[in-house]
Image (spheres, rainbow, N blue to C red):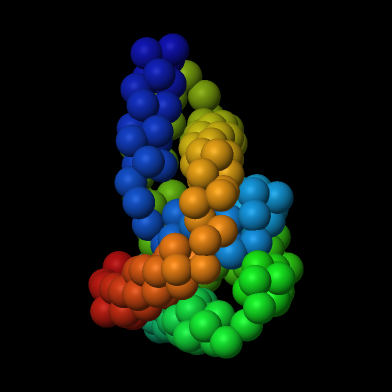
Length: 206
């Protein structure tokens, strides 16, 4: 069972480090508002994973991943939210040209924790990932529900550590990212990336 658990943790660690919408959302928030808001966003994303974990253990996520209609509804809602964040970042990069340095460094609107939570909860791929992969990784020495719940907690911890460390790394280069030209460039890049992820989510299949 220990070997299975270590193997599962390794698989989850690799999947956690693959760049995706969560990292793009965290980048946007951390660069625009600082490391504290970045960490709050990570907290919201981690909470979103726990929500999906509860739904998975309860069996509701399996219903979502099996229903084409339900999957499409959540998929389009998630894609729409990522597109909204992306367009917001692009508009912010344009408006920052005419703002004073103090105004340009003001925190973006919206609660960062809620931003992370919503972006993660509206990602139906998490439901497919949890219901399709976790059962195959769960240690056989535990009940299926216990094994999956344990792996959900592991994934949440790995995500918090990875994205939290990424936010702190960005904070080390805060002086660089606070330069107006760099901030505008980062807003544009993250905006385009978020829009790209939104279109990808909207066009992918279960």
